[in-house]
Length: 140
Ligand SMILES: [Zn+2]
Ligand SMILES: [Zn+2]
Image (cartoon, rainbow, N blue to C red; front, side, top):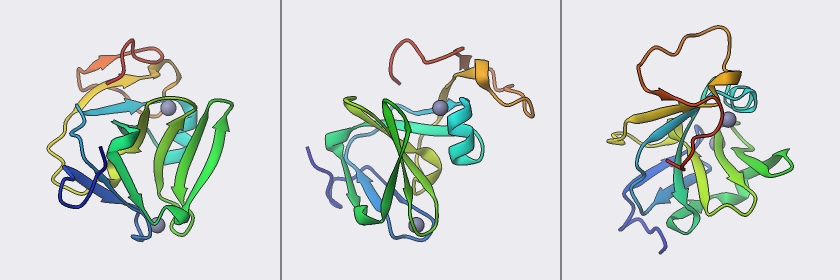
């Protein structure tokens, strides 16, 4: 399945517009990751939708820089404006897309919090959503 402008259910992009993407399948919702790597990469909590790789079409991909943040993952950001856009796990079928870069209205809601054991000490999680100490047992 490939996302084209005609079939995209969601679109988004970086702050400067050099990187745009189209998603052909509706994600279930948004997952907030509180791990220290996400907080450094995004400046705060990482809010992501998980999308099957084959359903995402990225335009301006040459403007995406990929930073290897761990042995098993890379993080993609726009090399012009610095927007943090993607989390890509080695060999994983899903690509995580930063929810804050989606065009609105998204029609999505936040589902759960993950890696709350390493959350920042400067905020509280008080929305009543399910919290996981590390990763969730099932992908969102
Ligand atoms: Zn940009
Ligand atoms: Zn994280």
